[in-house]
Length: 354
Ligand code: SF4
Image (cartoon, rainbow, N blue to C red; front, side):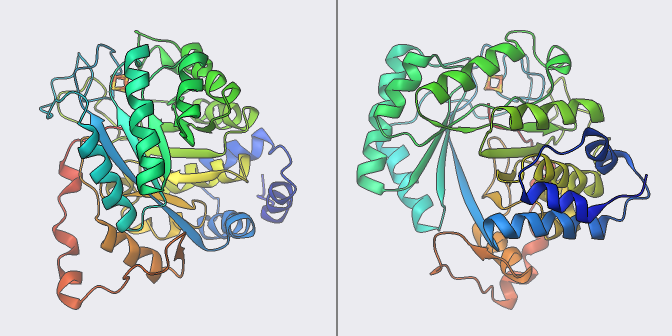
């Protein structure tokens, strides 16, 4: 089938449902011209978001000690990955890190707490921290804390939380190969609870966990059905000690195709390049700014990533801009540029948002 890029762009600009055969073609057609595909996805992205790139900074406010068995996660009870485990950080630490994220130009401060979901008492504690961040720091906030009920979502919303993250991670049919301690439906229920409490939704996937093309399509269309405005696409990096370890199915071109697919199926969404950007997209990171309009700086949960200066330089070199803060310094000295290759992130374990 010949790709009709003009028609794909037209559908996306009208926010019309994207045909499944075309979505599958994006992932599976070896003859598809990737330069034209990226340009078409870029036309949609630029129409909706201009050339702006949103920077997100994750703070892992509680790490490890999780009773769930997500096979990709170093914080799970079944992972043997050697990570640093700690309970909820102090309010002062979380606030100070929020100030630092804002100072470094982060558009949004994403707090991630390990665990199946917070108790009511823990929800109140998180709400108190969020209230202080909103009044004392003044930055967009996102929380990822596992499964939440409507009552808990309402408490968080009342405290000023802007957005709740809960990733679908993979399709309904592939979920039981990834985790057995909760279901795909549990994840959907959390999204419904957050939405009915008036929170913005953030939900995405992890590619590279043995899923099929159809599984990826299922996630993309499910997120469209829920009209999720923020979609992080994580690319699994194998973590020694985790049960899900083999991600040979990913290549830079495959990652680019996945990002383009999500742009066409969810044209108005903030498509974020999540964990694994540096190691999996490699030389195509700048290309990925055409389908995607958002990314993480300074690493993920259990992994290091490129620091903010490197990311800002990448964005600037590709002719894009940082959303929200134009005062950021974007010029690396030549000495700094020579250090770019020293980042060992690919050797570090990576986890994604719970
Ligand atoms: S992804 Fe979240 S729920 Fe699953 S094991 Fe990791 S911290 Fe626990």
